Image 1 (tube, rainbow, N blue to C red):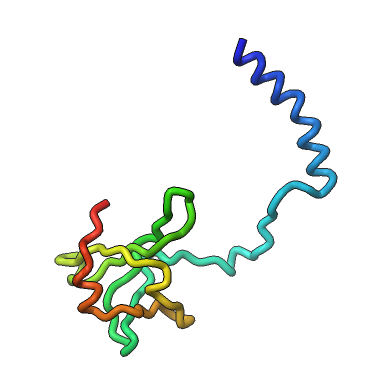
Image 2 (cartoon, one colour):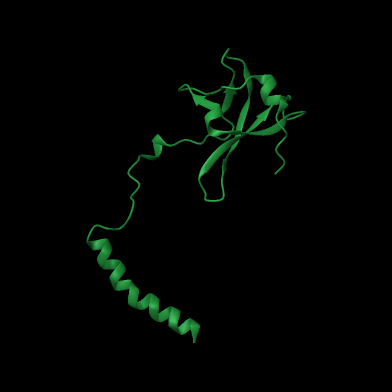
Length: 116
């Protein structure tokens, strides 16, 4: 019975949804060219004095799906001895070529490692 009601709801709502789309109220539309977008995964992170200190592993999101911070891989050599730490979005700035940390190397290394 529940499946039949769900099917009926979908069938009855279909024309209404199509009408909304015809009226131009189809919701947000992606208008950016794909060349405008880029991934931040493995993007380099430098200090203010232009010393490479690591790279962005991921963008972290909160419970509502909103970007909340970066997961950085710092230290180590060829993925040996490195550690992952999380920093808030405001801890990094973009200079057009790479991210620059507002935190020092010592401050980043003092953060508790992020364990996925």
